Amino acid sequence: MKSRIEIIQDFHLPVERLFAYLAEHENMANIFKPARITRVRGGDTERNGVGSVRSLRVLMAPPFEETVTAYRVNECIEYRITKGSPLKNHQGVMRFSALPDGSRLHYTIEFEGKLPLIATVVKIGLERSIRAGLKEIG
Image 1 (cartoon, rainbow, N blue to C red):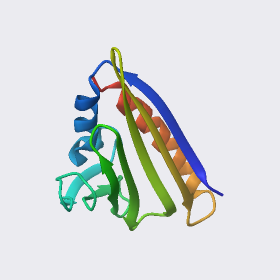
Image 2: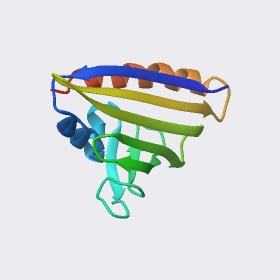
Image 3: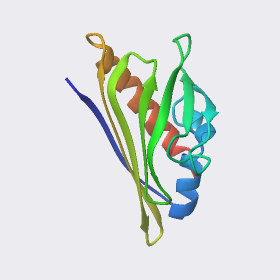
Image 4: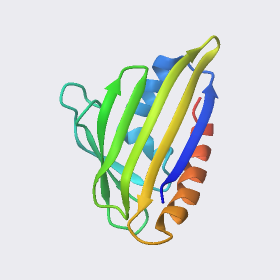
């Protein structure tokens, strides 16, 4: 069974600044606390664009990798887990839109667990972490 996280949040930042911040792999450590995130490789044509890869390590769990699969500046970032992880069929999508006084992020993550109950446990911790991390952004 697929788990889904959906977060819609408004920011008092121009969409260009919000996108630039969230596109930078290293900044995602502030969203996915307590994960440590390192860049494995840059994108095919842009530093954080399609083909870029980040490695995430959460506490004592083995690291896993996420790869950017779609990247449209100030509009959308999509990524998938491509190596490691107790999750399967994972897809994260960040959609950005401008508002008269800032910007809006519509963030969805869908995934399944490779073992029973894994997806439920991950969903609870991940959603809590993302919501708290996004509140700290300007």
